[in-house]
Length: 220
Image (cartoon, rainbow, N blue to C red; front, side):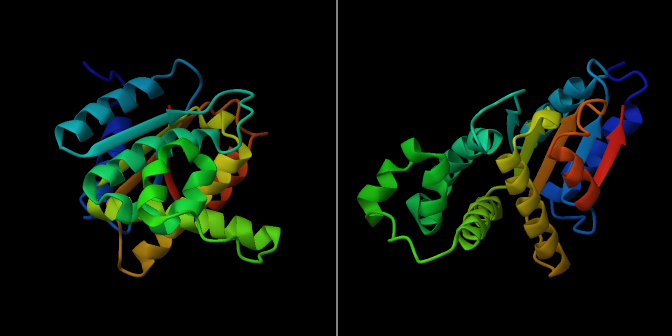
């Protein structure tokens, strides 16, 4: 058997992803979290889910969080790299250009072609740090939603118990944007997935996210 004792958990995970990617279940939360101790089978569940999603011709993008990682937004940098490449393949620089100021803060090496086609970034507006941060979060999440509008995306963040503070903020902003779109009847084909060790996350930024965000979750 593929999942001895895990069939129900995998079924819930698969139904969540299918519902989000096919936009047949906008009433379900945007985020599915799988918690459990190390060695409990989380990686195996997501390997099988990745296989099924890819067989359905959808895009599955994954990243891992690392203990003690020094780069702020490090996990999201790794997610955004392939999302930008998907955008380039689907709609070209026109999908990237409106958000290039925010994206360049995370991926300066990927956006040289945007500069040559659209020119340098607009001059920084006179924003206070809180306004600038909010603009960065809004633009980054709107870019991801814009790509998902053209190409269904499954985004998987592994080892969220080690997530850095910047990535946790971006994850929270993205989930809230998706929920807002769902509530307005404009759902996106986007499934946000995460796994974490449930005995190591209580002092991490993930702890507050799990309390405050709309989600579906299973414990292994």
